[in-house]
Structures are given as C-alpha cells and as structure tokens.
Image 1 (cartoon, rainbow, N blue to C red):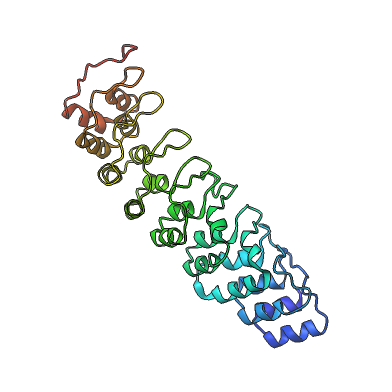
Image 2 (cartoon, rainbow, N blue to C red; image 1 turned 90 degrees about the vertical axis):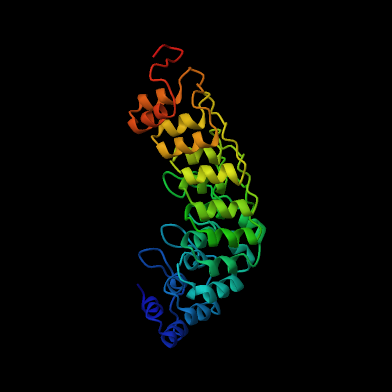
Length: 316
C-alpha cells in the first residue's frame, strides 16, 4: 500500500489531492492488484472518486484484482444503494461502453448488480444500452452447478427476487429468453418452488411449454423437485400440459415417483394424470417408486388403485 492508497482508504480528500500534486503515482497497484480508483470505489469514497476522475492518468477502464474488474464492476457488486452516485460519476467519466465491459468471469456490471440485489444500481446501469445489457448472456457458469448463458433475468430468478425480475421486465427483458441449458427464468422459478415469482411470470405471459436441452418443461422441473403448488399453478394458470412425457416415455407421475414426492403424485392424480400409464419399458410409476425405495409413494399409488402385482415388459 502506498501513502496515497492509505489516504484514499481513510477518506482524507485533502491529503489525496496534496499527494497527487507531489507526484504520487495514481496508477500504482497494491498486492491485490488494485489501484487507488478501485480502492475508492470499494470503500464508497464518493468525493475521492470524483477527485481522482478529474486527474490525468486515472483510467476508469483499468481492471484490477483477481477477477480483473473495473471500478464500475466493484461498485455494482455492492449490496447497498449508497454508492449509486459513485456509479453515476464513473459512468459519466467512462462513457456508455463500460456497461458492456466484462470482468475475468465474463460478467458485465449489470449481472453483478442483480446478484447483489441492488435495485438502484440496476436502474442506473439500465439508463443506457438497455437492450444490449438485458440480452447479455454470461458465458461462464455462476456456480459449479449453474449453467452458462444466464441473462440478468435468470440471475434474478435464481435469487428468488421477484422485485428485481419486475424491474428487469419493465425495462424490456425478454421473459422467455433461454440460457445455455435451454431454460427460461420460469424453469428456474419452477425448479426452486418460487410461487410468487411463478405467479409474476404468469402475469407477464411467460411460456410454460418451452422445453430445455433435456426436453424438460417447467412442469417437469416442478415435479422433479417436489413442488406440488407449482404444478397446480402451471396446470391451472398457464394451462401447461400434465400429460408431458420424457424421451423414455415417462410421465410426470413417473418423475414424481422417481424422486419420492408423494404430494406431487397426489396433485398429478388430482389433475388427471393416468395412474397406470407405462413408459417405453412398460414400467409404471409404482415400479419406479419401488426401484428407488420410496415407500410413501408406493402406499399412495396403492391407495389410489394401482395393482401390487403389475409387471413391466421385462417381467419384473
């Protein structure tokens, strides 16, 4: 850390100005590869950010840290709205193109602001280049288990943040945009069992019939993850088909049975899914439940009239 960096961190504006006058290097880096503009952005030093931006040699496009982020990325990652004026100053100094600058993980500032849940930052970023930012697909997985290609709306759905989703859609986000797995934000909301978000997507006419790269609709994911209320919502509001089959001929009842979700099986039965429908191997839902040891499902199916002695095409 240089003396100038300490002055920035401690918010000593007059010291910062004097040190720069004496020739302190505004481009110097600390051990984490941050310069003074990065540090002032991270610590929300508004007056110092504005001072630095007026000095020769300060580049708002300069990246730093292990994730190679600009000061705009760093400010956008903050969870509080107090740094919005800092973001505005940085955007004014850098120009609109910095909104589409990616960091080392392929994320533009908007995606970071959505992940932080910072609505004021999101609105500020979307004041220019709106369509380009909303269509931007993150080329990298956000987590080990998360597919690449998420838009800002997908990230809002993963956060279960209906207010953020509403902001993004109001600004023009495509409700049915798909990520690298072929999933829409509705797929994610259904898989998460996020009832308020699914209801919101119904209000903005999201398409519940879109299948992902594994031929799964939101209804499949709701059944797979045990969300009976979502199944009911999709069937009643979206008019989603309850008779969807997978590539092996399995029904939604098979999927619920495979994963041991008795409440989903009951909901599907209530909605009219045929109890005795076999897949391509002749296996019924009771065979699937028995194979994976789901006693509760077996009892539910037997109570609804399934035969305990029914066989598959391969006689088991």
